[in-house]
Length: 277
Image (cartoon, rainbow, N blue to C red; front, side, top):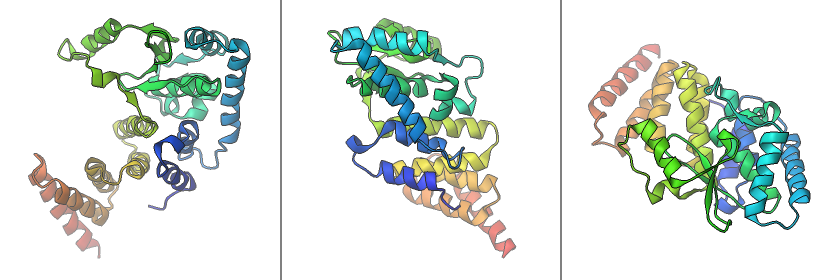
C-alpha cells in the first residue's frame, strides 16, 4: 500500500518527542486519510479563534472560573454536542467534521475542549476511562473531571463508578490508573482504534487497513496491530502480505492462545499466494 501524504506527515508528527506533538494538527492528519488534500490551517485557525474568545472573556481567571466559561462558549453558544443518534458515524472521529458539524464522540469533543482551553492558557489532560473519555482539570482548587460528550458536565468519582457499573455490571472498580492522564500519542492511538473498529464492523477493510498503518506509525513494536494488518490483508486477498504479517506476529508471540489457528491460516495464505505466481 502506498502511503498518502497525510499518513507520511502523521508518521513524522508522532516520531517527535511527546511534548512536540500537536494534538489538533495530528488529529487533522488522521482526517486527511478520508479527505485527501484537507488543509488543516482553517481548522487550527478556528480553534485559535475560540481560544482567543475564551481568553478575552475570562481574562486572568483561574481554572475554577475558566471551565464554566469554556462550557458556556462551546456547548451553549457554539452548540457542540455528543452524537447520540449516530455514535458510530466515522465523521464523529474526524476533527474537521467535528468542528464543522459541532458534533462528535467523547474523544473528539474532548480534543476540541482541551485544544481551546490550551489556547486560552489552561492545560487540561485527557482521561481514558474504560468505555468513555473525559477531561481532567488538575489546575482547579480541587481536581475535577469534565465530560464534553454530555455538555461539559462535572463528574465525581462516584459518577465514574456508576458509569462503569452500567457498562460492566459492577464487575469493574474504578482505580487510580484509570484516572491517569493520557499522553497525546495515547489519545491519537485511541482515536485510530475507534476508527478501526468502526471500519471493521462495516466491512470496510481498505479503510481499516489505512488506519492500522497509522497505528503502526505510533508504535512499530505493537504485535497486535501487525496481526490485525495481516488479517485485513487476507480480507483484501493480499495473500503474501497477509502471510508475512501473521508469520511476523507469531515470531513475536509464539505462545499466544491463537497461535495454532494463525499458523494454519498463514500456511493457507502462503499456498494461495504460490498458486497466483
